[in-house]
Every structure is written in structure tokens, then in C-alpha cells.
Image (tube, rainbow, N blue to C red; front, side, top):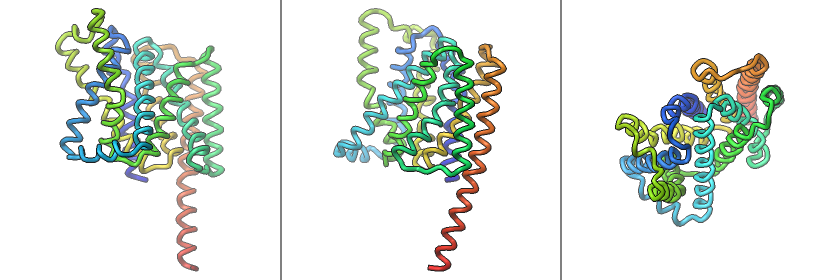
Length: 300
């Protein structure tokens, strides 16, 4: 659990600061950035798997239909999430991306209850209710249907659920996911070249090198997330995720100068209150479980 928590915190801090990176490529269309992100992620993960000597694990994937289907689903879901996120950041919707990732933990809890049969305790239910009220306040204050936020929450929530069901080395799993969408990315490269609209290749050398690093920027947080998903309760993992959108919200206010209302700040405070409640309830629940286990061992 502790190891999973550390991995989750690292992943969400990395994701929180990602808008700073994608803003470097404001003049490049989101679809083209995504295609480079996929290709260079594949290259980076290929090198990592080679160093780890895990290419043999790929045979297991090829021979398992259920594993292939799960990895295909997770690959398509994370690619969709990437595309929406890049487009939103480069079109000045960082606040809405933050809202999307505030929504996501609530969706994680719902998915955990429905698909993984996880059962929150009373304190955790209270935290969920407070967070739900906060998100509702934020959504109403936003003033229109937040399709970017909902799309980000849904795609990443389902991606996390798929990862929870995949028992596979994190590096091999990430490489497999990029393999799923690699043909689409390469096909898009060919299309852009044929119509003369490929912009990334015309970037200054320094910026193109930064774009090459998108593989590292993409893969590292996913690597830590995969390790966290395998070691933590899915609902708890969702609440740790509030680190990411909090950083994004702060960036949108203090760096990108997007407008943020007082109501939004109230919602923000409620979400952090929910986080504290959830953390306390989780710790108490763990202590109760340990006491019960000790009691059972004593009297059996």
C-alpha cells in the first residue's frame, strides 16, 4: 500500500505539471502532437523493455485473447484521453481539464463499487458525498456542459479500471498499449506528409528535441500509475488523483491567467476537505481490519 501510494503521488505530480510542457507546442495541431507522443512513447518503452530484458513477456500477450482485448481497450482509451487533454490545454481550457480530473476520482469509486466490489466505509461515503457536492458546485459555476471535463474523466476512469484488471509488468503493459495505437499514429504521419500539413518536422531543432522527449514525458507517469494501480485499492487511488488537478488549477490561475471565480475556489476547498475525511476514514478502516485479523488469529 505504501509503495503504491508513493508511485501514485509521483505519477499525479507529473501529470499535474504536464500543461506546462504541452503549451510549448501551441502552434502544432493536437492530432499531430498526439501522433508524435505515441511514436516516441513506443520508442522509449521499447528501449526500457530491452534494458529490462522483458521482450519474452510479449509472447504471453500474443497467446492470451483476454489480455490482448484488455490492452487494446486501455491503449485506445489512453490515446483518446491524451488527444482531448492536449487539445484542451492548447485551446485555453486548463480549468476544465482540472475539473475533469476532479470528477475522475468520483467515477473511480463508482467503477470500483460496480466492477470490483469494493465497499467504502461510512467515513469514505461522507468524503465521496462532500466531493460530489463540490464538483456539482464547480460544474454549475462553469455555466455550460463541460464536455472536455466529462470526456477526460470517463476515458481515464475506464483506463484505470482496465489497468487494474491487467496483471502484467508495467513496462511491458505500456509498450503493448502504444503498439495498439502505433499504426494509427504512423498512418496519420503519412496522411499529413501527403497533404503537406506536417508542422512538427518544421519546428526549430531545440523544440523538435523537446517533442522527441514526449515519449519520456508520457511514459514515466503512466509507468508509476501502473505500479500504483497494482498495489492500491482502486477507489483510494482515485482520491490521491486530486493532487494532479489541484496543480493544474493553480497553473491555470497563476501561470496561464485563466479566470477563476470565488465559487470555484469554494468548490476547491470542499474537495480538499473531502480528501482529508477520506484519508482519515481509510486509515481508521485499515486499523480496524488489522485489529480484527489479530483477534481472529488469537482465538481461532
